[in-house]
Amino acid sequence: MSTKTGASGTALALANPWAVVPSLGNLDAYISAVNRLPLLTLEQEQEYARKFKDHNDIEAAGKLVLSHLRLVVSVSRKYLGYGLPHGDLIQEGNIGLMKAVKRFDPDQGVRLVSYALHWIRAEIHEYILKNWRMVKVATTKAQRKLFFNLRSMKQGFKDDADAPTHRDTLTDDQIDVMARELNVKREEVIEMEARMAGGDVMLDPAPNDDGDEAFGPIAYLADASHEPTAMMESRQRDVLATDGIAAALEGLDPRSRRIVEERWLKVNDDGSGGLTLHDLASEYGVSAERIRQIESAAMKKMKKALAAYA
Image (cartoon, rainbow, N blue to C red; front, side, top):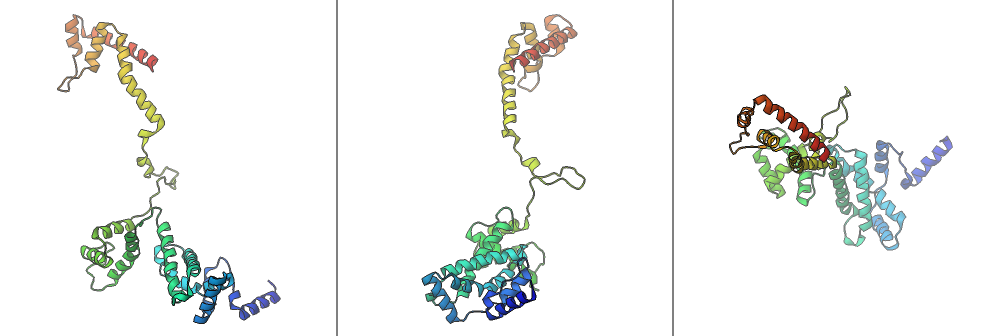
């Protein structure tokens, strides 16, 4: 920018304070600029509000918004403890301010600053609830009230020199005080305290510095039982364990079939198995080694039959 252009811009700003445009990307410059914007008198506010309401005068609405930007900055500072960027809080508050200007009725007998406070806070509250955690911590009206009062009341307990404890966790007496003052159940206070104390956990964390796969909840939260391939394999195993084995047994001679059933398929009421090799050897009048050979040959035959069945 040339010196001449810079001088012209300064002169314009001095002649018209509404023409102040802060440098983009610089929050300090923005705050400094909005604090230099002039406040409106009651008469000016009424005039601009009626122009916008009756004639949809956008320039008048702009002046109402600009003159109250410092209010948004002031309100947003109270929410810095939630760890969210100040610029984002201001931006959301500005949206609330514009909604307030759009709905403001100059004939209601209240100043815009009083009317706008509700809308500014509402937008900031909604932004915090959506972005403070990946999972929304408060959904009902009572939970929202708890969320925005719990931190300030806990801080009050810590600052109280007569408080029985300065720990981060609440005592039973403090929980009762909160529940009574906020008109909620003590169980709701305990639940919200637990929600706020918890943090976000990545389901699938990135590999660590050594290049190894980091262990995360995704490893044990995944339900493999309903994975299509696993379901097909499970169904196939069930079929083989019933129809497949029955078909394989049909291909054996009676002696081989009885040996296999006694050795592998029979379970008595007391949990014990069927006959032993020696029991079967005595029954058929052969050696235990011969029974083992018959069993081995039958198992190989059944394996081929099951492979063909599958």
